Amino acid sequence: MTRLNLRLVGALALAFVASLLAGRVWIDPFHPDVPGAGLILMQLRLPRSVLAVLVGGGLGAAGAAMQAYLRNPLADPGLFGIAPSAALGAVLSIWLGSYGVSLGPWALPVFALVGAGGAMALLGLIAGRSAGGVALFTLAGMMIASLSGALMSLAISLSPSPFALSEIVTWLMGALADRSWHEVWMAAPLMLVGLGAFVVAARSLDALTLGEAAARSLGVDPRRLQALLILGVGCTVGGSVAVAGIIGFVGLVVPHLLRPFTDRRPSSLIVPSALGGALLLVVGDSVCRILPLTGGELRLGIALSLLGAPFFLALLWRMRDGVWR
Amino acid sequence: MMLCARNLTLAGRLGDVSLDLSPGQVTAICGPNGAGKSSLVSAMAGVLPVAGRLSLDGHDLPAMQPRERARLLGYLPQGGEAAWDVCVRTLVELGRLPWQAAPMHRAHADGAQDREAVAQAMVAMDLEHLIDRPLSRLSGGERARALLARVLAGCPRWVLADEPLASLDLGHGLRLLKALRDQAAQGIGVCLVLHDLAMAMNHADRVVVMDRGRVVADGAPGEALSEAVIAQVWGVTGRWLGPEGARALSL
Image 1 (tube, one colour):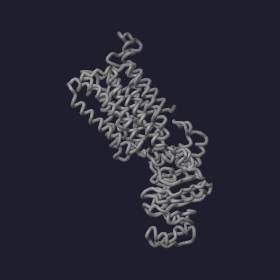
Image 2 (cartoon, one colour; image 1 turned 180 degrees about the horizontal axis):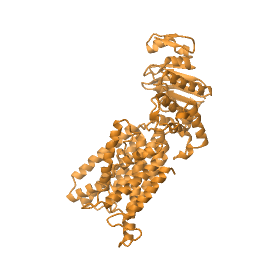
Image 3 (spheres, rainbow over the protein chains, first blue to last red; image 1 turned 135 degrees about the horizontal axis):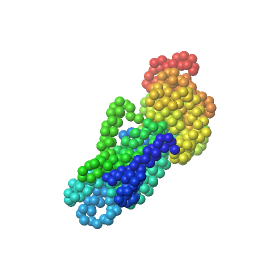
Image 4 (cartoon, chains in turn yellow, green; image 1 turned 60 degrees about the vertical axis):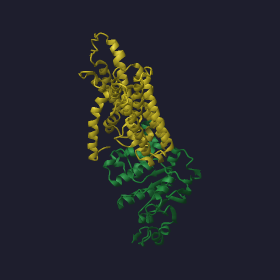
C-alpha cells in the first residue's frame, strides 16, 4: 500500500470513529451513559457512516475513472447520464406513489437502479455500434443526462400535490439521514462490483494518457474499456443515487485534490480517490449532522455543492492560467 | 520480421497500397499534406481499420490479439499527446503496458525485465538525467525523445513513427534520427513519416513517396526522391546539391 493510501486509511478510520460519536446527541466513548447509546450507534450512526464510506468511495473512484477516460480534469461521473437517469427512476417512484400506486418500501431504490440500468443499456448499445470514440460516447451520455433531466422536470411540474413535490425536491438534494442497514446491503455489492470494474480498467486508462490512437497501439480494446466504464459508473453512481440521492462534486473534487500526491497515472489515482471520497463524505455527513440548523439537518448534497462549486470556479481560474493538469 | 501490406484501401485516404517493408533499415514515407502517409502508418500499426491485408512474417496482423500485436509493433502517433503531466519515467513505463497482465500493475512494473527495458530506452534516448522531470518542464526536443523512449521501452520489432521530427530543430532532429538508425542497426524495423525531404534523402535507407493515397515512388532515396518525382508530387522545381549523404535541396 502506498504512503498516500495509508494516510487516507488512517484519516478515514479517525473520521469514521468521530462520525459515530458526533451528532445531536454526543456520545462520550469513555462514559457512554447516554440513554439508548447502543441503539443510536448500531441502528442509526453505524449504517449511516458505513453508507457514507460506500457512497463516497464509489463516487470518488468513478470520478477518477471518468477523468482518466475522458482525459479531462473537469469530467464528472454525472457526464454519462447515469446519475440523472437513476434520479429519474427515483422521482418516478415518488410520483407514482403520490398517485396512490402501491409500490412497496423498496420501490425508490429499485426504480433508481432500473433508471441507472436503462442508461447503462442505452450507452452500451451506442458504444457497441460506434467505433469506440470517446467523443461520441460522451455526447450520448450528455444527451441521456439532458433527456432524464427534462423528464424529471416534467414529473416535478406534474406532481399531484405539494407534498409529493416537496418529497421529490428533498430527495433530489441527497442525504444519508435516516438510512438503515438495508441501504448498506443494497449499496455494498454494487460499489464492490463498480470498484472491481475500475481496477480491471486501470491499465487501459493508463494507456489512454497517450491518446486514443496510442492506447489502441498498446493493445487497449476500446469497446471492452467502454463496457468496463459503463459497468463501473453504472454500479457506483447508480447505486449511490439509489440509496442517497444526488450527491455532486465528490467525483470532481476528490481526484483533483489527490492527483498531485500521485505519479498522475490514472491507475495510481483510483484507490486514493475511493478513500478520499469516503473520507469527504464521512466528514461532510458528520458536519451536516452537528450543524445547529432549525428545521432539520443540512442536506449532504447541498453541503457538498456549496463546497464543490467554489472549487470548480477555482479550477477554471487555474485553467485560465494554463495550469490544469 | 517482414511487414507486408497488400491492397490497403480506405475511402478518400488510401487507394490500393501494397508495400513490403524489411527490418534492419529505416524506411521514410514522404508526400504532401493529405497524401495518406499518416493513414498508412496508423493502418500498419493496427490503429486504423482498413480494407486489405497486413501481415508480419506471414502472420495476419488484424487476427492477432491486440496485446500480442502491441508487443511487436510500437507506434508513435503524430502530435505526441499526454493527457496528464506525468514524469519521464512514468511516461516511458507506459510502453511496458503490453507486457503487463495484472490490472493494478504497479508492482509488476517494478519487474526486472520492465526495469531493464525502461532503462535501455532511457539510455537510447539520452534521458537518464531527466528521469523525474514532469513533461510540462521538458523542451520540445526532450519531450519528443521521451515519447519515442516510451515506444522503445516496449521492445517492439517494428517502430512506426508519424512525424517524430516535427517541431524539432536540426540538431535534435538529427540526434533522434541517429537513435532510430541505431535501433535499425540492431535489426529493428523502422518506418517514419517525414516531411523534411533532405532528412529522408540523407538518413533513410528507403523512401516511399505517396500522393493522393497511392504510392508513386518507392526505392533508394536518390531514386524515389529524384528531382522529377519532387516536381510531379510537390509541384516544385528543385535540385539536389552536395555529395551523397549530405545533400541539400535547392528550390
